[in-house]
Image 1 (tube, helix red, strand yellow):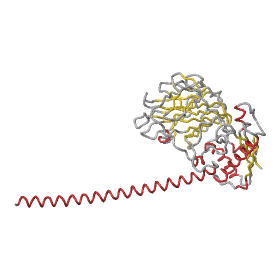
Image 2 (spheres, helix red, strand yellow):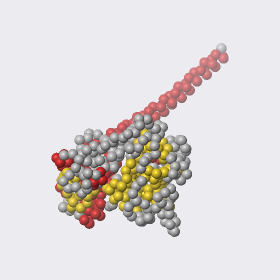
Image 3 (cartoon, helix red, strand yellow):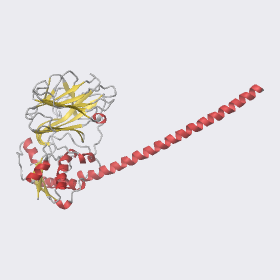
Image 4 (cartoon, helix red, strand yellow):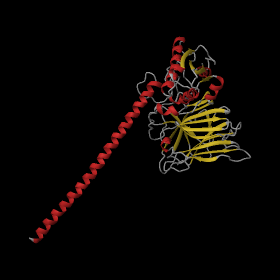
Length: 444
């Protein structure tokens, strides 16, 4: 009987302790749920606010569009006139893929409102590998190693895979690099994680050597892809007889960017070297490039695990120009640019063009009494009437961007379209057509 009483008392005590523990557990669980709900609401409000801001700007910069549109990087080689580009390709139906599929996501046009990169307007080289067979090394390139054109997942976009190896260079067949030029390309990574080497990355090299060496004179940057820490972007130059004047690591954290198909932009103006990853500028060194020495662009990868970690590039564009339009507008009272890009046959401004429009806005802010005429021009594809309307719409889109994004007073701007009536190039050639598709800013 005593034993039964003790057992009963012990059981009651255990139940009471259990209830207390359960009560504490559920109390903590309730607090966690409450905090989680708060975080969910905060994220939703933030997302909805961002979406409304995006839609407002998109309605300005992409007339007739109610929502966001992904920037069209693939058409940067031209095709801004009235006719659609010819994307016919004769590749076989079989695909070589890079493994897992890629989710590129949408880039909001809002992030480009502070983007100060100005692309060159005379095209020297462009390659999206659209004319190459899947599995082949691209026809416009050279290498001392290996590489191939691939597709990734279900996307039709083509990429060149840069194979790992010691001192393996990839050289596009560009003309000799001029004094002022820009370089752009899309980059894709696969298999990068916390075990990726701190020395893994892609190197962009400007050199005086046309073959497979670093050269006697060069300027280069190394873009890291490792994920376990924030690795900086390395910048280095070399001048024969003087050695490396610049050899530094620029602090940066681009870990998320390199996993999400970043767009790399580089501008060279005499000795000045600048580099952007997406819309963020990370490198701006005034005296990095040995002037008048460098002729050739090269790429190479470093420290990738063979078969696991991969780097691809596509949409390589090299263009002469990229000069500071602000000084030219102030000194000459007029500038003409092919760098403001529009969707084919429309007045929708491509987001990467915002750097030029931003520079124009800065001139107007500095000179409060200045008024500008914005004139749109097209190539001769299409009818005279349609091209005249298109040129007017494009000039008006640029005006609207200056007013709505950068706060320029509308009474300081007038827009006009000339259609195909004032060509500066031969409309029978692709290069001539590209020259004719332009926007002029004229001081009034």
